Length: 75
Image (cartoon, rainbow, N blue to C red):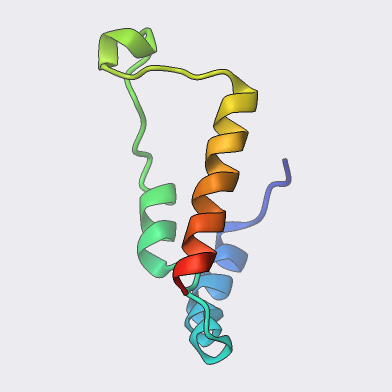
């Protein structure tokens, strides 16, 4: 994990819409940055109590890869 200063992230989000010129959707937007820096967090309790269900790391990575592959096929 790498820490990036908030002003640098905001600058990246400002130019991210240029991805459209390459035929891609930006993965970072001003809204995303606003949410990330807003301090929004989950309560400190067990995930099950919050209605969340954790999956094994390997399954999560597999699911994420599958989702990204499906998104690229749709473009």
